[in-house]
Image 1 (spheres, rainbow, N blue to C red):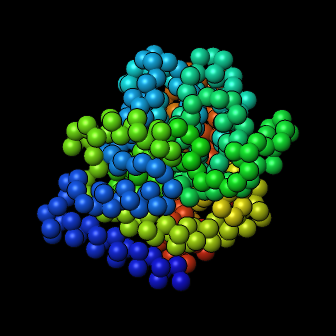
Image 2: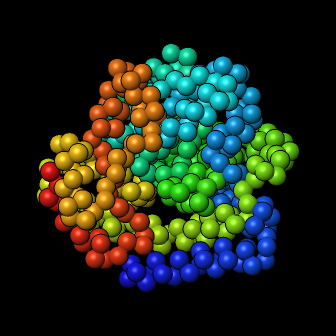
Length: 358
């Protein structure tokens, strides 16, 4: 079943990309517009633009928000390192936040402390497809740009209350999709993002008032900022096949999770059903990364450090004293292969290694 679905998706991706090449229409054009329409329908966003990189998307969002140069922008220590680098290059000050060890996510209390330390805006990376307590974070009244590169498709159920046990307000009484909470949302489409175009990003405005402001800037964007059709074609097919891909990912995740329960290691706490999405299979080790990697390699399974390209990895010495949970997770968290095209034989082999991992 897994192999049949995967072959169908692969053919559609190849057909879309090859059509662009045969027609010699690989620059920004019709398929960019088709991708934008698909994202609007999938996300329910009022306005969407498809750009060549997540860093470009962040730059346009900050222009639209008119955030004063030099302002503090809060980031998770486990967010991808491009966020820290882009914030500095755009003329702002990164304010790095530690995470909760059981989820790998920033909490409302961490954001509140970051705001007191000078953070004016939160760039929220929803790591590993897991959603934080969005109602508690939004209740702080701090502008938020969501990075849903790993959490696209996640849907939060009505809130049961905030971190302090208070009752939810009317705005949190209905299920809401990742990307609908912040002022803007970035869906990266890089090589290892949930929906990939081989590179690029989609910038979304959930509501009309934010889109009106953003549109003035993106309408004037140079052609070299806009995502080419050859990338848009791949992303469009992946988005159309998202539901089937996610079903396959969830089946594999469930198999791996059962195997993990018989071992000595653990994974992150996450919502079941649609409350979180499947980006990969992270394992938080009880032992050392070196031992785990050597063991998996002997079994012909390649694992990698989950946060090798994170903010804490980029600025380890500087951030370690203030981001102890993130540092611990950086050193102990690995990723096992999990993607829709994984064969049944490979999945069985991986599950066996997970259950016996030192």
